[in-house]
Every structure is written in C-alpha cells, then in structure tokens.
Length: 254
Image (tube, rainbow, N blue to C red; front, side, top):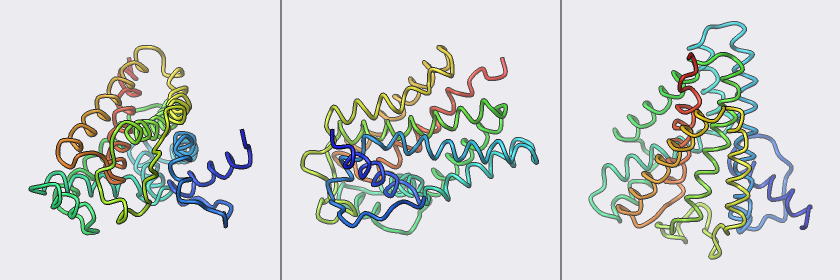
C-alpha cells in the first residue's frame, strides 16, 4: 500500500466534506474523490469529535437545548452545510418534479423551495432535540457514531447505486470505476466500530434505522431519477445521521 497516496486521499476526503484547513494538494486528480470515499467515515468521525468537544463545552454553561443547537450549528459550519444542501435539493427535486429531467433540473437550482425548507427544518430540529435529551458523555458518543456512520451509509449508496445525473455537468465527475467493494467494506467497518460503545440493543436499533433510511432514500431516488446524485447522497447522509441519533437515544433514560 502506498502510504503517501493514502494520506493524500484522506486529505482529499477532508477537503471534499469539510471546511477544515488542510494541506494544499497541487497534484490533485479527479478520481481521488471516489478513491477517497473509503475515508469519508473517518472524516465524519473527526467532525463528530469536534462537535462532541463543542457539546461538552457548551453543556458547562447552558442546558440541553441551547447546547444542542450550538453543537448542531457548529457541525453545519464545519461541513459548510454540504450534506444539508443535498437534502434540501433532493427534497425539492424529488418532491416537486414531474419527470426525471425536471427533477434533476430542480435539484441543480440553487434556490430552496417548500419541500427543501421543510425537510431541512425537520432534520435539524430532530438532531437538536435528540441530542438535547442525552447526558454529556452519551451525547458526545452519539455524535461520533452518527457522523461517522452516516458517511458510511452514503458510501454504500455510492457503491450500490448507478449515477443518475449528467456526468459532464456534475460538480465532481463520477469515476467509471466507481467505489470498489474493498473500499466500501473499509468505509463500512471504519464507520461502524464506534457502535460497540452503544451496547447491543441500541446499536442494533441504530443500525436497523440507518439501513432503513438509506435503503428508502436510495430506492426512492432509483424510482424517480434512476439512481443517485451528489444531492441524493447528501440526503442519505442526513437521514442516516438522524436515524443513528434516534438509535443512540433510544431508552437513554431507562
């Protein structure tokens, strides 16, 4: 294994998914986006750790809801609203378009519509409320689990579903090779291991809910536009993140 290349791919994943400062890469190749997908869950866990630090710090000064709102807001700033934008565009396109071409055109429109605004508001409210109901360290763990696991779900959707948009018009041109099964397996394993700290029942529920959210979104996109786009992958990540938080918070007070 070329360790120098793996480091470049990890940096590429961080550059693609976040607004965090990273080393400049002058030799970037477009295929690196797909090859770096194996590291998306690790980057998600880094985002989760940063959010966990903010959650723990905010919790020393404010009660659950304000601390949770600050934490979720910080996560949006760290990622630049990357996945939230995909969720809103997917909701507008899949909910408002009458055929494939119209749905894809709406998803490319930078303006947000009713479906997008409602989906975004619902997901953010759920994330805040679910996090607010947890004790400090339980919330910190849930953030790492949800951010890493949700990126793993998006990678699995990348691997399993065809690309539905126009490759020439995509912000990042899809690689003909796509995400390979070894890359997907690595992403899944790296995204799933923190679940062991939730305990058996909650981990099983979290996985079940995340799989259900991922499959439902992927099948809906397959039926309406023939596959996934970057926006759909953002929606998968957001829905899986909520699903994992729901699993992590289940019976938390029991």
